[in-house]
Amino acid sequence: MSGLIDKPIEKLDDDCFEVGNYIYALAKFIEECDTPMTIAVQGDWGSGKTSIMSMVRNELKKEIHSIWFNTWQFSKFNMDDKLTYSLLFALADELSQFAPLSGRVKKLKGFVSAFAWKILSYSADAVGASKIADDTSKMAEMYSKMKEETPFDSVLTLKQHFQESINEITRDDSKIVIFIDDLDRLEPSRALDVLEVLNLFLDCENCVYVLAIDYNVVVRGVKEKYGDEQLGKEFFDKIIQLPFYMPVAHYNIQKYVTRTMGDKLDKNIIEKYVKLIRCSVGCNPRKMKRLFNAFELVSMIRGNNGNEQQKMLLFSLLCLQLAYEDTYNFLVENIEMLGAEQYSYFIDGDIDRIDQTFNLESETDEKKIEIRDFMTQLIKIIAGRKKKVSDEDMRIFRQVLQNTTATNGCSVISKSSQGELSENKIGKKTIRNTDVKYKICCLGSGFHLGYGKKITVEFEGKTYGVKMHDISAGRIDGLSKFYYENKIKEGDQFEVIYRHHERKVIFLRLLED
Image (cartoon, rainbow, N blue to C red):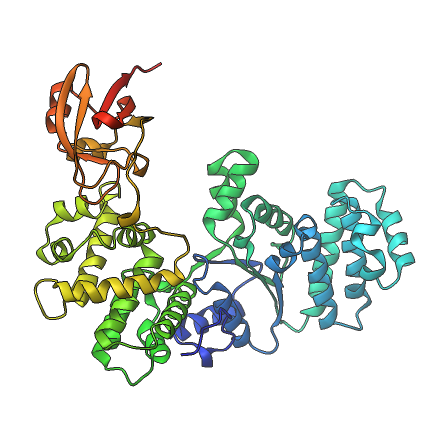
């Protein structure tokens, strides 16, 4: 492994995930389907949509004409205001390559240019007349003939000429397949603009459109533009005849990991790496490439030292960094505060202590389970075959954890060096479900009053002797009596006053407006 680049796969020979059956089926469907047909290739960023489309394109029969348009390339160079025009002109330009001697197809460029002037309100300078027509005077003459038309008539004229050009190119019973990539990388409203113009041509005979577009992008775009989410769902269902979802869950990542890590590794070791990936970053190719590149870099920083257990520990920490960033940052912030006893909670399965100690109370139940499951794997790697984490295990763990900060996206400062608040402070606090559930009060690191130190809480003349949490800065523990006596509930709002010299936190209830 020497660095993985984020480059789409174009041929099935280079496929590591064994998706050939999907590629063959989709290519065959395109070849045999009735037209017009619009297919949406859907999936998260980095899931491999461009690769799937490229491989399908390469598997199509030679008599099938295909066109590729990347919307992202145009939008990157501040051309997104001309994106719809650029798309139409690119289509016309590509079609002219299939029938270079056809006068009808050649004229399609001029019709598109005239359409741009008429409908999209582009100036001659913006469009670049000398570049978009073989003969400027002919284009101007064509435009003058259309200028008396209504916008609706202009659309019909262009659509008719587009269909006639397609018919001429496909008169030998072939098809035109138009691949439009990276639509979902545009802003939702801009992606919708492109789709609305495309919609004029999606029902042309002998045409198959394959769009890399996510359903949620369309819905958001319609909601932003028209304020109606339901309309977005209806629009998507109307223009798409076949939704194809990326088969990420079925990727054979074991083959990919083996090729990337080296086939000299034992099969059981490879399976452990695969398991770590599946329960963290998942099978998204882009995320996996980032993971492996980070692993290679940090391994180099470490001088490629360490046994297989330490290498797997490094890999698992990088998985944690990419998939569960808040938990990773918490471990780094508390690198000296958390020890063998705390990490052993995961081996013991002590859920309450895990959630309180590792700051998981605010996570959803589903997220808590995911993090606990992953951390349990991580701790078992630290402990090896032992049932408890030793001090020596922690020494190695801290060393490796510190190394991984080289690829961390945000700056994290260890809380072991964080200074306590040494002055009076005033703030506000809204009681959350987590506070009520565990009878605590998380004021945040801005109220760092020391770890495990005793303080006094005062409310309506009553005082309570409590203490700060051993690890989480600004979290007050032991507030059961405070909650029960004063009927504190979720949503209650307080002004919080800290008096430094008295080590006292005063709560003043704020009344709702």
